[in-house]
Image 1 (cartoon, helix red, strand yellow):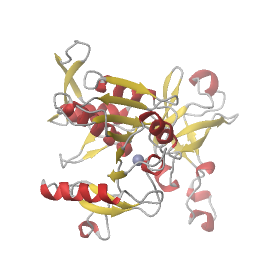
Image 2 (cartoon, helix red, strand yellow; image 1 turned 60 degrees about the vertical axis):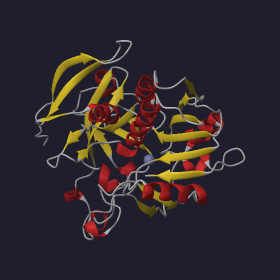
Image 3 (cartoon, helix red, strand yellow; image 1 turned 180 degrees about the vertical axis):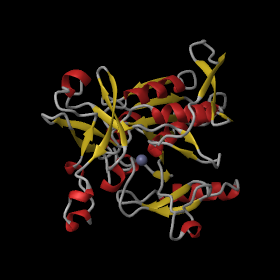
Length: 347
Ligand SMILES: [Zn+2]
């Protein structure tokens, strides 16, 4: 049950130099959202499953515009904002991925149930019972992921994690209600969780879909905003890739376009401040970024890794070191592009 009261929008001011962007004060459960929270709300709530990143790209372009000298795109949808410094090299790339995990309509059964394909890695436990939004050409349709009820399953089946192929989305199916005609759902339509950005009871904590990796998109935007008026002895490339969740595909084409000399990959890590060990682990919310030592597709450049560590230590920025044995980031492709790109992952 969704018990949180609806947010209140109060028209506030026109913010942009060219007057094109309206800023609203948004009050959510008694909290006035600041500029960062407004951006996080907008950028996490839009649809951007792998291959369908258009809405996220539009936000990236809008936010980079005016803060960079030039915006370029690769031919599968990744975006790059170029901020020139006093030298054209080194070219320093900062990148996050725009896509989120979701689903795609695979088929509509003759009764009207939606069968779906995963885009990115899903665990059956997480998918089942979730409210989902199917984005059709006529607008979103809400449904819920269902399966054969456990009451009707043999004990052995009940103990297994259900596979996505055995689930369906129920959009209000009823005999003689033609889902295809009435709701305009078609194979190929993207499906995302029906989730709202929420400030939790502990107001330092946010809950939303797609923090992996819109948080990094917001970081790229913030970096380019901060560099707008500063001089720097290099060229900075603020980038956002497509199709990371389905095999780091956008990273390959984006690296070709960007031709960086060095790359900082921003992505999310696995929070381990959960039972049973809770706060014994270093990877916990509020403990600063982690600097990755290893993942399944990249060993970071050691000089760059140590520079990141030394910089954090000298500036007294909290951080920790981490490794991911099963999983990778865009760095997996970028660091082996062209003749190789010294890279580090900050998550
Ligand atoms: Zn990610």
